[in-house]
Image: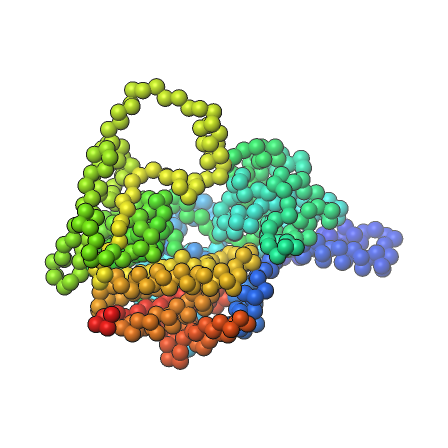
Length: 618
């Protein structure tokens, strides 16, 4: 690919220098123009932060390290991490099937290998294992060599690649400008869908080859951020274009249009551009080996292992959507025991149910529940739940819903591992089945908007979700709190300016309230795991400090496997006098911090594991 880029630059030079009477000054100007074009039609984004947030992170990580983190966040990981459903298949069988699929599709992966080696001071991976993993790096699909994670499979991608967009002097290529969120999905392997397009060149017809660039939020004079472009704007590729300079270094690939310009801005859904030449090439696993594999980030898999679930235990995943960690826990338990998956969103709970059914898991029970209301008082009314002690009679209270039939005679049972929609339809008596239905024009317009904009917060995707009134204290052996967070570790990320110091503090306050609930639900002798997908110390190390200082019966516990780095020790003083306390010496090696700029090439992530001691003092 680099050779192709050099050939392109040579062609530029030839175009300019074949003019016999070109003066030295003209040659110099031509060279400048060529270099400018080469830099413009590239992928070299700069992640913009709120100035106060940037100063805060520089204090935490140092200027150079934070610059490396910021750059890494703008790029996807150059491999896909697949979790094999060991109840249905094996990693060897999955690798064989994926290799066959890639052979049939002609997929080629030409990336550097996946390096699973962190700094020696911050991990305890056996060096022989690292060398063995390195020896497999010439393969496009490899099995993880970390002990206990042999069911994890890595599939390599590649990038960044140089792309010839067909630029000629004073004749820019046809172009499609997409939203930032659309671009982040495309960088992960998605296609360009109609709702993601902001603008495009004139005279774009179906089947045209177009360059795809990104519109990233820009600072407004009032201090906010936004896009200074109207959807449907015509792009000319010239400096007079709106967003011409902002698109510099933000070209993510090339594709073929599936619709004309008119079709793009009149359609409400569908693929607009088929991306056939990408800056980052990552394999797609859409509808591939359904039920046998699940695409999941490596740190998320590690979080499920840190919880160390055992057969027959009762486990709570407090903020479970979309269900990746829930199902990972259930598989580690061999689908024997009880995994409670709770989330405050109806539609997200439905997604968990569907994933559990797809993977063939029966030990998962789902509830709609706000994590801030997860603890139910012992003197609650008896019509909420029926309580019964478990077989071991160890003061762990199992809670089953017995709220009686619903309005149409449907029993209050959570359907997991079966077709909930079908079961629901079979039990609901349709008293208006023979009535003539009429659809108004208003309903038609509403459905059209819904198709264009996607499901809203209160729009149900179908199926049935059971509400929970909370759980009794000390009623779980283990609890996972994968807390909602600022998500500043997710990648690729092309914009981070929306977060302020105040919003980051609010995230931390919200997480403390959820942690206060979680710590009550774990029985003495149990385990509580806290995790986030952010690089913000205020949501990570500061939460650990709060937990250890507030609940004396909690202690940090070792995690296995341990491949992440050490946590941050110290504190941060803010200009307004606020002091944020982090870890103390000796505690940093008991947490796992995944750095997106490290050789592991993962998302930014954080895991803390707490052992719960006697609660006599509360």
